[in-house]
Image 1 (cartoon, rainbow, N blue to C red):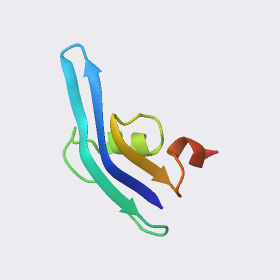
Image 2 (cartoon, one colour):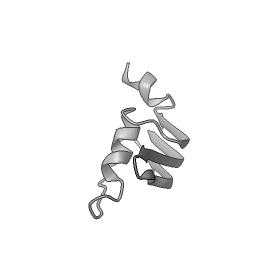
Image 3 (tube, helix red, strand yellow):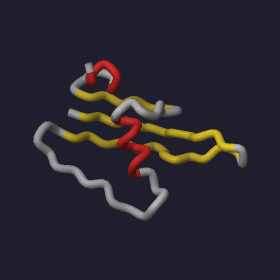
Image 4 (cartoon, rainbow, N blue to C red):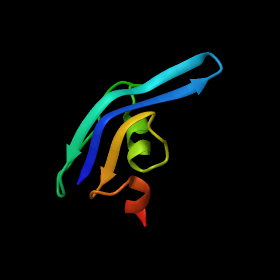
Length: 74
């Protein structure tokens, strides 16, 4: 299972902070099929990168099978 609870992700830029994700919550059970759709720049890829531990959330919790994304990969 993938669990995303109250996740925020803010990128610091030269023009100031950019909030890419705000209060995102999601649960995906084993065998579920999920598709993220939305306009360019709405955070789809950022959420996937956070689930894969390629981005670190500013706030909230992510888990994959009850483990942190980093631990679940090993």
